[in-house]
Structures are given as C-alpha cells and as structure tokens.
Image (cartoon, rainbow, N blue to C red):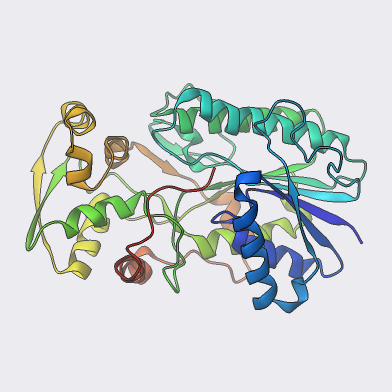
Length: 362
C-alpha cells in the first residue's frame, strides 16, 4: 500500500476530487496536509466522505501542518510518510483582493515547499499542481496551454503569484521533476446540483441583478459581445483531473480546464437575467473611473453586490486554448457542459443557500 498526499483539503475542489482518486487507487490511502485552524472542518468532511463512500473508511489521514509557517511546516515530528507516490497541490489563496505578502506566502512559498517535499520523496511518481488559467494576466489574444511567460501584466496579486508559482513548477519539471499542471478557469458550482462553497466570480453579477425589481442597469465596460467569461463547473474540473491523471501521456503536460466555448459577457448576463426575471439596460461606462468609484466610495461595493476587483474581468482580452485538454479527454466521456445548460441550477442553489458567502478557505 502506498499513499497520495493532498494539500488544500477540505477545500472546494479537494473534497470532491479525493474520493475519485482513492476509487482509482483502491489499495492506497490519502494523507491530507491540513492547517490546524481547518482541522475540525477537515475531520467533519472526512467523516462525511466515509459515510457517503464506505470504501474510504480508514483511508484518509489528516496531517496537521502549514506550508506558510517557518520551517518545513509538514506536521512536526510526524512529517510526510516516505511511501507517498503522488502529491496533489491544491492549496492556494483564492482572493482577487489579497495583499501581496499573503499571496506570496501561500501561493509562491507554499508551492516552493511542496516542490522541495517532492524532491525528498524516494518513490514520487508525479506532482499534480493546480494552477489557474489566469496566469495569463491581461494577455491579449488566445493563451495556449504551453504559454506562460509572455510579457503579460497582472490585474492583482492572486494572478501574479499563481503565475510565479507555476514558473517554479515549470523550472522543477525542466530539472527532472515529474509533474502535470492543471489550469482551471473560473470555477463555479456543480453543474448538476449547483452546490458550491462560495459565491464569487459570476455570482457577483447574479447578486447585482437580484438587487433590482424589474430593470437592471448593467455597466458596459467593454464590448459585451467580444469579452468572454472562462467559466467551468466544479464537476468537470474534478472529473477531468481524475481522468487526465490516470494517463501516462499527461506527464509533463499543462491542461486548461475551462469551457472551450465560454459565454460572452452578454450571454452570461442575459442568461442570468432571464432566469431571474429581469430586463437588462446596458449603460456604457469607462472602466478605470468606475473601478475607482466602486472601490473607494463607502458602501459602493456592498450596494452593487460585487467588489471593484471583479469589474476588470468584464473587460478581459484573453481567451484560452483547450487543445491538449480536448485531445487527451477524447474518449473518456468527460466533457465540459455548456453554460446555458447549468446556469439556472447555479442560481437556484444560490437562492436556496443565502448563508454561503464569497470567501474560500486559504
């Protein structure tokens, strides 16, 4: 029996991915590196997974540790067991408004520690690094899966530090570390149930539309028929990672896990508005002054239902190639569903669960 190691449990992706990975490796166990402040949540989640999947009982070990702490941060004297053969690095800070120091400590330094750990494991077969499509920053045009350092600028510290983290992984791969990189787009809830752990990204636009009784004035910050939102439901991301990880040919590859036909801003807004029974009135506004006012006027973000940092994504000049993803998922049965097929499900879940907020675990 060997083990896989996962960081980022019990987060949004890790909680759903872990049972699939263990089902594919029925003789193995999982060691989940968990920050001490999340241990209680992790214990509850592991218990729920074991109840739902009895074959997991006794196969999920929680290891207290913190990749951002001084020193190894890997559980003190217990450490990571030597029989780990796969490392899944999902831990990151997902916050568009995160400060630079926090973003670097979690996304960059944490990834560097994971790489060091991988190099110390005698039987390591592969590191699976979860990055983001938005390592592209403000790149204008179609960003390929092999692209990374293209001279692009970044909208925030989240994008910049995820880019820097992927650079570290790419360098380690060039030095011989076996790894695969996955770049999800903007991850939303499950396409079948709508389940999610946070309302951010496109949910901000849904919150905004819900604030108006009949007609919603929507800022037209760029051409809504040209700018696209690279959305992707959680179930596709998890299924794609599981399917790709099982393939020998995925070693050394980078995959963009996003909708190959993403909705335009107009399609997203109109689809949400239709489901909510709203009519949209597009109001042309310049991005820079609008972002400044929303970010500085007291109460403006709360009134609009979306943070200033989200506005710039409605003007993104980037689209994403999914050539490698499409090629290697062909024949697996894993296909990204069309946004229109699940948009209503996301909103129904959002309406039924107002207790969920817009922040995620780091």
